[in-house]
Amino acid sequence: MSTAVAGASGYVGHRLVASLDADGEEVIALGRHPDSLPDGDHVRHCAVDVGDTQALTEVLDGVTTAYYLVHAMAGGEGFAEKDRQLARSFADAAVAAGVQRIVYLGGLGAEGLSEHLESRQEVGRLLAETGVPVVELRAAVIIGSGSISFEMMRYLTERLPFMVCPRWVQTKVQPIAESDLIACLRQSADPDRVPAGVYEIGGPDVLTYEDLMHLYARVRDLPRRRIVRVPLLTPQLSSYWVHVVTPVDRAVSSSLVDSLRNDVVVTQEDNPFDLECVPMAEAIARTLDDQRDRTATAVFEADNGVVDGIFTLSTSVPMQPHEAKGARLDLSQCGNDLHWYGWAWAWVLRIWLGKLFGEKLELHRPPKVEKGAVVDWWTVADMSDHHIVLYTNKWFCGEAWLGYRIDVGGQPRLRQVGALRAKGLLGWAYWRAVYPVHLVVFRVMARKQTRRAHALARKAARSAEAA
Image (cartoon, helix red, strand yellow):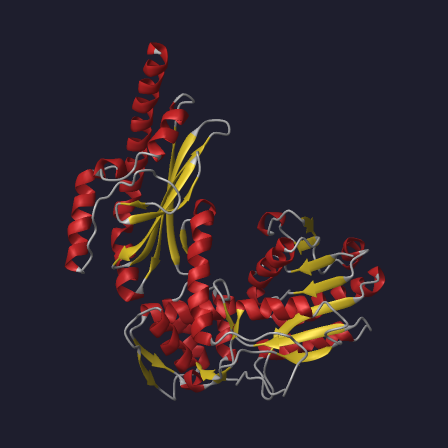
């Protein structure tokens, strides 16, 4: 028995594949671009276009359960027709390959649906027309880092303490926590537990979008947002406003904003899923905590720029092979010395700036630099012989990560990365203001690290000769 996930490169696909892999289940991750597919001990990548029915049939041969998590919104105008073509191709391939069950994630909504929501539900009908048993889950906003709807709400709430909003802020929505959605998707693969059919799923709280933004601000410990409703502000006009404030893909956000006029709440009285859904305040808190923990181990792979609310900037400088050993020694000698960070005078200025906003940054060196140890105002979030990641939540502008990694493949290089999950408008403004400075300072910091590595390597060599 095996499971295939079409759309594995997307947000939900990544999370689902990770969950299946963690439980030791064999997974085939399908997508057009292998580099964007999730990895795992039990995950096999397969580059395939869902629109290529013949190639897809060969891939699905022997698959018991196929998850369909594909949508074409990012393609912009005409996405509904593209969704139809892809759904028909996937359904035909599933029949030809003998797939026993399709699990599809669609969208909630009842009447007068937007083009996006109508397309989501039409795809479910097309998948079921060929006779393969289909479980269609209909959900609203997913509370999880990487969910486009959540990220739109996050950016708006973080960056705008005062908002002029259209009527859609009073639209009712029943969000669902990421963990609950993944549990429903997993349970849907079991025909003894979940018969084929359409099921509406959502968390325990029915809110308005305005309520949701206020709830996020409260969990994030931001001041209460001031929201003024303007009935004449159309969805088209509000989509322009969203484009200005958020970095979310415009083609996707335009379709989602148009859907905000539809109430998306659960109307079914019951469903076959065995779980106790997470309240929204807890779901938001979990999302922020999970993102914090993932960033500690994934910060070196992050792209420069802003992704899911985190600003990242990295640089790397070459080292000589003999300096790599010195660099490894240097990683374990941080703490109680501003010179370790590069320009000590620049860090003195940063500490004094923080005092104006109530920060109390103090130098401290632990007996041993290891994971969990307190180093100055940081905590060691992750560490090995070749890298260290420091994390702090003591900055006025948000949570920050500072990482160093020694890449020894080929020409050795020292990679340095800094990341900030900006908090509120002040945090966003801080990053924008210091970004040009960081472009210079980060490279200087990395070069100073290599100089210390060179000195430590020479010292270690002299000690070895003396011994």
